[in-house]
Length: 107
Length: 118
Image (tube, rainbow over the protein chains, first blue to last red):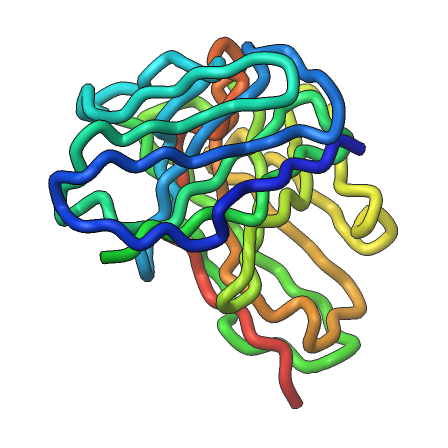
């Protein structure tokens, strides 16, 4: 089973700042199998980035994903008030499908 | 636009069976893989398993002995049964569509909280 470790656990930033979130896999994975989700309080997760770097429909271009091998990054170029949420990475080919523990981006 | 809606009891007694149904609109249940995930209060996401209209299923090994996910093509619904529940099964349960090209969960239901308590 591939373990995904997200860091930091909490990121305290201000609107307009840049957010950099990390997802590290316990072994090398294909970039095509790495996904990011955003979850706001009381809501279901929302697909943000798939294939490590492809932005999902209707996702603002301030969100971007990058990385390969064991290290992946979600970047929010300029935080908007609605971006304060919890972000999860997920790997497809794990058995079972696994998620990272999440990074909370707070004001 | 694909939409998913969970339904079922919000309270289940310990040792009993949790049963939820997901109604799919905007897509045929005969396409795609249909999943259940859950999230205990204040915690992270756990994948429970999936079902396909062909009868193919796959479950999280940690839950496999207690889980059944099935598809009802006549109603465009899929269902979750989790037997012998305990307080550890208290969670928000989500029904979720899998996008095979994206290799990602692309459409989520709003979630339903199921509490296990006597």
